Amino acid sequence: MNNIIERTVAFVQDRLKFAEAGHDWSHIQRVWNNTKLILEDEEADVMVCELAALLHDIADSKFHDGDETIGPRVAGEFLASLEISPEIIDHVKKIIFNMSFKASLGEVSFHSKEMEIVQDADRLDAIGAIGIARAFSFGGNKGREMYNPNIPVQEYKDKEAYKHSEAPTINHFYEKLLLLKDKMNTQAAKRIAEHRHRYMLEFLDEFMAEWNGKK
Image 1 (tube, helix red, strand yellow):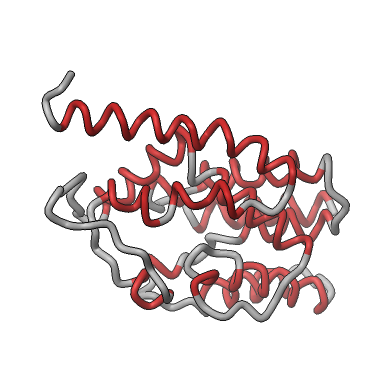
Image 2 (image 1 turned 45 degrees about the vertical axis):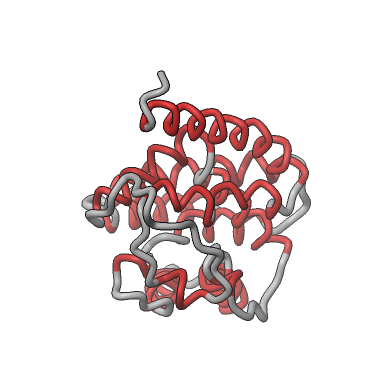
């Protein structure tokens, strides 16, 4: 297993060396570490979890014209080159395809304990101080406004509407990031999310006070 993980790490590091800062190797490493932390309290297939964590953003659809199939395909092709069992490859591909927030806005036909763990690990990196930094990094990369009081927050009912949103970054907190605490699957992630959620609320209070000239 160690050799497989080492080769996967090298592949991901090379593939993402020019990635946007919120979806680069550092993000992958944090999600990988979160996965291993959650696994201390959860029973699951460790190899599937670690491979899915390492490969979950290997070709994020946000940077590939919304193509949600490219990530699982690239991951699957790489894993096949390692001569890993088809069952593990299929499981990892299904996790990558179904674990995102936008996927949860549509019909999710696959579920596993391993997906719960990696999904939580990824969502933890979307909240708290790191989550704030990543949100503004992505917004800047896409040329979005930080905040515009004339653009209301939306409640997305389907993933297509969510995928095509170009709303300001502050809206993203209310449309996604503040919802994640209550979507965590595992007890470990729920505990960690409580603190990170409070931190985001404090940040938003401070942001609005400064924006409106009250501090």
